[in-house]
View (tube, rainbow, N blue to C red):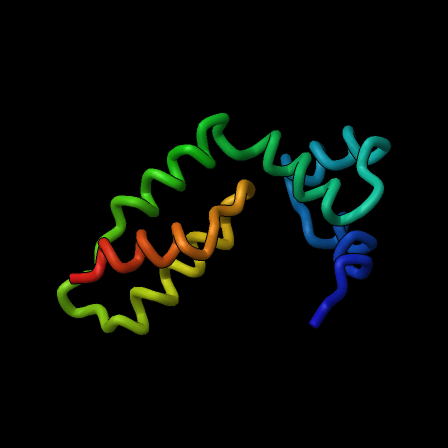
Length: 100
């Protein structure tokens, strides 16, 4: 895999257009990959993104043709996108309650 340090030093190669222009304007305030991710989220994600994501997680139900394994993997992906982590118990309750 690629380390955070390698990603950080490659930012200008990874971004284009408006995102690259934005980065160049704030690069003096960004010192590592986590700083970059934080600033990127602040600038590009809607203000209520985390709230909406948690609401989407709570409403996501297993689809009629979706296996338990597929549903579980999808939910784990959703949980990983949350900045404010929730407990394993809460994750399992959400998954269990939303199984078909």
